[in-house]
Image (cartoon, rainbow, N blue to C red; front, side, top):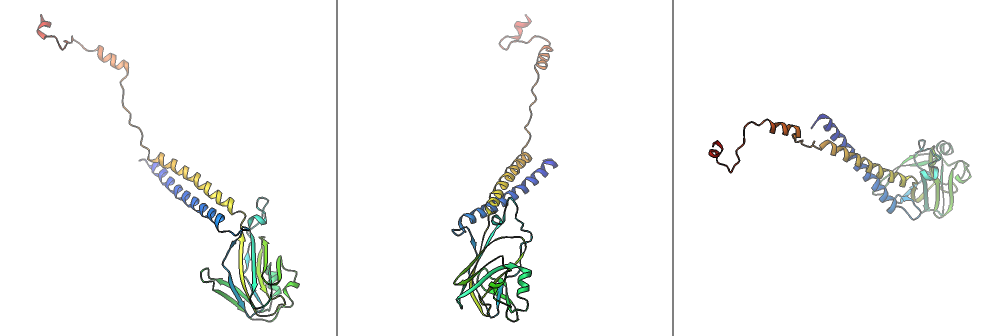
Amino acid sequence: MSAGKVIMAIIGAILGLVAIALVTAGAVLLWAHGTQRTSDGFYEARTVSLSTDTYALITGPIDLVAARPTAWFPSSQLATLRFEADPTDVSSVFVGIGPEEEVASYLDGVGVAEVSRTSPFSGEVTYDTVDGGAPPGPPGDQDIWVASAEGEGPQTVTWDLESGEWTGVIMNVDGSAGISADFDAGARVGILLPVSIGLVLGGLVLGVLALIMLVLAIRQPRATVAVPSPSATASGQGGTTGATTPPDQDPADTEA
């Protein structure tokens, strides 16, 4: 096998592995899209129980600077987030999402607990707690929220993803200390289906290309058989000297 065919075989093998990975990833995403969503199209994490003696429960910064909606994929197509808090100790609760800087300004000097880690298996929650006093006013009176809900019983916030840095907040409606709630988070990803289909189609195209390259690399050239030309055969017959004795004739008869 020539050096060129060896290189072609290596490239074909690599493309084949990439094709398998793309098709597998696309198939898994298609399976998730078809079986793991709620009836309204959300993927949901497991419910976790949150509690703190401080005045506010907050998420870490939600950095979405790179997620910029376009004409092809508006905010609602990129992703829609949904947060739900169900109070367990008090009757009413506030849930809101706001710009990180403005939320930090509102909660400056306030006692808060930031959710730093949630175990995907046990649901155990780890907090980073900052001591402080009460907020300057109830959260619902602030005009910093891009999405919020408050009231008795479970409260749900649905928000189309936007570029920026954001913070999620859970508080008591009156801003008092001592928060306890069951929390659910979910996301509806509009671009997941086209991405899944694109991965599968891209993998199939690469797979066909890899197969062609491998076939060309391992195919052996056909063996050629030399066939004498009619002119060569005729000259060979014409150059024969002497008479040829038929096989059924006695040589003595010929001499006679």
